[in-house]
Image (cartoon, rainbow, N blue to C red; front, side):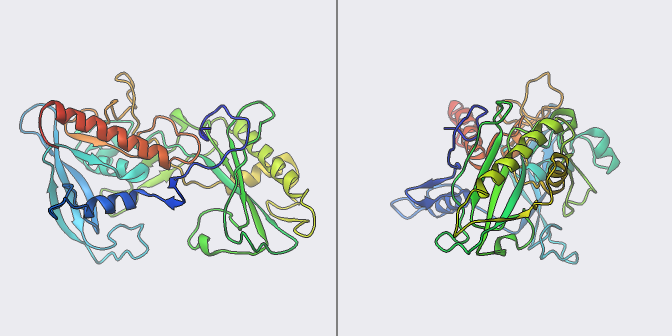
Length: 377
């Protein structure tokens, strides 16, 4: 079963990158690729990874009087140069350097930082760039628009006695049929206390806690009322302004589904027999009883960690589509975007595997281009 599909009617497990009990990740893949050797001991892949480097903008060449061509990036070298880093020190400016591309430049800064990099480079909404005195290379109104995310929150309970065997583990997943026959809620539980993401959240433990995690997939908040990523300044070290605009569109239907998930979670947990039961509900709490009260709790509590779609792929006649079907940034040559910002609509379920699939597709597209021209990438 595809946990991200709109057409489901039974419980299923969360998608994850695990084979034979071993966790896999992009970081592991890259580390293995960098260290891979040929039989003669030489380096197998032409890949270098530089850490402590903050990209400030993409560099363009205008000399051929055609489209501006991306030729590399400007970056600042130094530790913890970005304001979002808790180790940030404003007095450490970093060393400005350049890296040049032999063929193309690929931006993979993610949903928040790719729009920031493109805008700092002069590719974005012209009016916003002018507000920050950034020369406009190409007017792309869709850069930083269309921000989407799943809605997540927790229903936290306390058991009559501590859990032992599964302490601080997560397991299981359940996705019920909804009253209106629409699928879109991911309800999963585990013996932990989880109210959302905040500094130190993973260290919060309570031996008797049980949390039902609720994820609203395929939220209706998209299109012109979706969230945005905008520049605060032309300083690459500053974070952009992130506005999710939650519940700006389709709120009632999305909230109806999430209220129903709270009802289901309550029904399940209150039927647990002794000695583990009865459970005492901590969040939202038994005093939060009416539909309107539960809706308000959800509005106050929902958190974000699946942000996508701020540099979407789209048709040529879609003025908000920043990228074509081959991941190329419109209006310039030699520049592609490959990350979660590519999706026109947020995928259902957890997006990590889908981002990996997008990356594989983009790799195929680029390799095919240079295979045809008999050039090495």
